[in-house]
Amino acid sequence: MVRIHDVKLNLDDKEEVIKKKIAKKLKVPIDYIVRYNLFKEAVDARNKEDIRLVCGYDVELTKEEVYLKKFPNMKSPDNKYQYVECGELPLTYAPIVVGTGPCGLFAGLILAQMGYNPIIIERGKHIDARVKDVENFWTTGNFNPNSNVQFGEGGAGTFSDGKLVTQIKNKRGTKVLEEFVRAGAPEEILYNNKPHIGTDILRDVVKNIRLEIEKLGGEFRFETCLTNIKEENGKLVAIEVNNCEWINAEVCVLALGHSARDTFSMLHTSNVEIAQKPFAMGMRIEHLQEWIDEAQYGEFKDHPNLRPADYKAVHHCDNGRTVYSFCMCPGGYVVASASEENAIVTNGMSEFKRDGKNANSGILVNVKPEDFGSENPLAGVELQRNLEKLAYKLGGENYNAPVQTVGDFLNNKETTKIGIVKPTYKPDVKGANLRANLPTEIGNSIAEAIEVFGKKIKNFDHKEAIFTGFETRSSSPIRIFRESKTFESNISGLYPAGEGAGYAGGITSAGVDGIMVAEAIAKKYCNN
Image (tube, rainbow, N blue to C red; front, side, top):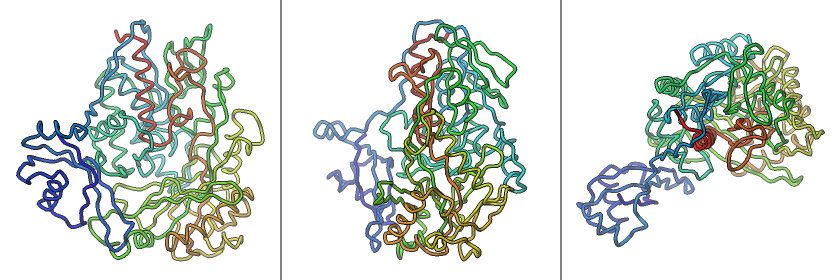
C-alpha cells in the first residue's frame, strides 16, 4: 500500500470528501483508490476559527506497482513484529518476571509467545479483588499496603488515564498497541495521535493479557512479593518470596514499578548497583473541563467530532527550574494513590469517554540529585516519602488530601473556602496552605509558571482552580544499573526493566522495555 501524510480534513467531512482529498494528495483519479486505512489522526487547533483534523492514510491503488516504482519512498512500512532467534544456552528453571505492570506483562507475554513458560509474580491481588480494595480505600479510608493504586495486577497505570503516548521511536510500540487491541482495547489507539484506553477498559485488557499468557503456558502468582535474592559467583541462583519461600531461578526480570521501595532497599542491601536519578514532584491541578475545551477549541468547543480538550504546558523559570504539566487527564479525577501507610500520594485518572466535569494534570518541578541531601542511592525515595507524610498530616491524618485554591496559592494563604471547581479526590479533602509547606524553590517556581500558563491557556490561573497535594511519583528516583547489550544488572541473570528501574516513562515505553528485555533473554537461552 501507499502511505500519505498530512491530509487535512474539516471536522464534518464525510467519506466521499475524504476519498477525494486522498486522490488529490496522491494526484491520481479517484477511481484508482481501492480502499484506504487511517493510521494517524490528530487535531490541529492552532486556528480556533478553523479547527482541522490532520490524517495519514495507507491507500491501496489499482496501479500500485507503477505508482510505487515512481515514488518508492511512499510504500507503507512493514511494522509486523519479528520474534528474535532463540539462543543456545539451556535454561533449567522457568524465567521469573516480578511485577504485572505493562513492562512485566509484555516481558511475560513475549516469553510466553516464544515458549519459555514464564512465572510472573505480583505482590498485589488480581484485578477484580484489587478494584474492590481500591474502591474501599477511596470510600472509607481503609488502606491496604499491598493492594492499592500502585500494587496489584496491571500496575499503577491501571488506575490512570491509560495514556499510550510516547516520545520513543521504537517499532515495538506497534506490537504493544496491537496486543492491547487484541485484548479488548478500542482500535482507535492504533491511529489516534494521542491514544488512551481509560481505566474502565484497561482493567479488562490487563486481565485478558494475563489469560492469554496462562493459555500459552505462563503462570501467575498473586500476593507474592520478592523479598530477597541469592547469587553465587556473580550469578543469580534463587529468589525469595514473602520472606518464607525460595524459588530456584537463573533469570529474573525486575519490572518493579516506581513504588516498590522496600524492594529497592533489599536490592541495595544485596549489592545490586543502584544510582540516584532526577525526577519531578509537585501537585495536581483541577479546572472545569469546559474551561479547557473553550480555551483550546474556541467556538468549536461543543463539536461532537472533537474529544475533550487537553493541554501541554512548560515553563523554564528564572531560578533554573522547569515546571511542566504531566499526565493531563481530560474529564478525569484526582485519585488517592498511596502505597505506604500514613502518606498521601495523588495521581490522575479518567475513563475512556473522559466525561467527568473536571480536567486535571500534575504541575511538576524538576528535582535533581543535588536536591536530595545525601549521596545514598535511595535518598530520592526519602525526599518523596517526607513530602507524602507531610501531606498526610496536612490533610488531617485520615487519608484526606490537603487542597488549596490557585488564588490562595498565589497569595500564599490557607484555603478556607472552595469555589466553583470542586475537588474530585476521595475519601475527602481539607483546606491548607500547600505553598507554605513546599520547598521554597518549588513553591515559587509553580507560582511563576501558573501566571505564565494563564496567559497562554484562558482560565488556567483562575483563582478558583484547585491544587491537591502532593504528586511525588511521576517517575522513579533511582536507576538500577544494567548492561546496554545484555540488559543484565551487575548480577548476571537479573534484568532490571521498566519505569521502576529507570528505563521507561509511561505505559507504552514500559511495555516496549519489557519486550526488549524478553528478547535479550530469548537471544541467550533456548526454549526447550
